[in-house]
Image 1 (tube, helix red, strand yellow):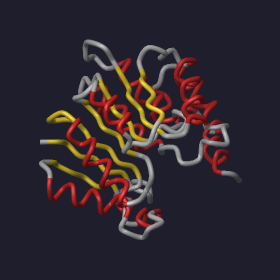
Image 2 (cartoon, rainbow, N blue to C red; image 1 turned 60 degrees about the vertical axis):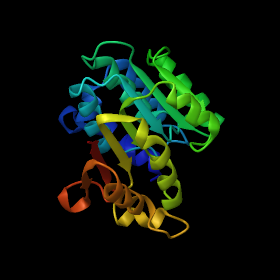
Image 3 (cartoon, rainbow, N blue to C red; image 1 turned 180 degrees about the horizontal axis):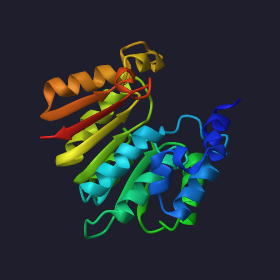
Image 4 (cartoon, rainbow, N blue to C red; image 1 turned 90 degrees about the horizontal axis):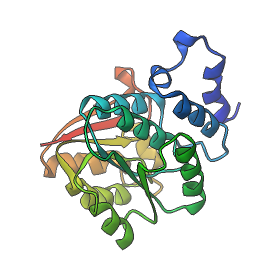
Length: 229
């Protein structure tokens, strides 16, 4: 069974077995997320637990602006946009999302527009460390939420945290996918991966932090949640 098929299996489950996050989404968003799960570029997208946690914290914190690094084809972006649309926060709701691959961004744009969010996102098609990405993302700072799910190397996350953590407002949420000890093996340079970069952030910046791990009922790949002080 392929990776997308494993995710699509939930469509065969009874209503009370479908991941809770899918029942929180607007019908148009849910429809587009199902379409995304059929795509060959779907593997590597965020898991339901991470998306569910992010959705609810965006909603209950009245968030208005989210910065995402690692768009892929818009699976997590759709969840973020849906949460922002429902958030009681007033003013312009905006997702700024960065990814270097135009092919993936073209797909994400189509899914975002089809779900009804054509005026609520900004796609930055470039590497996260590029001048363009830094300049464009700063235009909309500060952000209520920063979500990083890009490459899995220590060198990459260290650079992204150095650039983008300052754009997160005080009291804002930082999410990072693939933060477990298990996920350090995804670092092709074998330098400690996402986890090492986050541990260094905790030691150097004002942040309350929580590593969600498999032994606490989370996924094996892990999710990091931080609140900037």
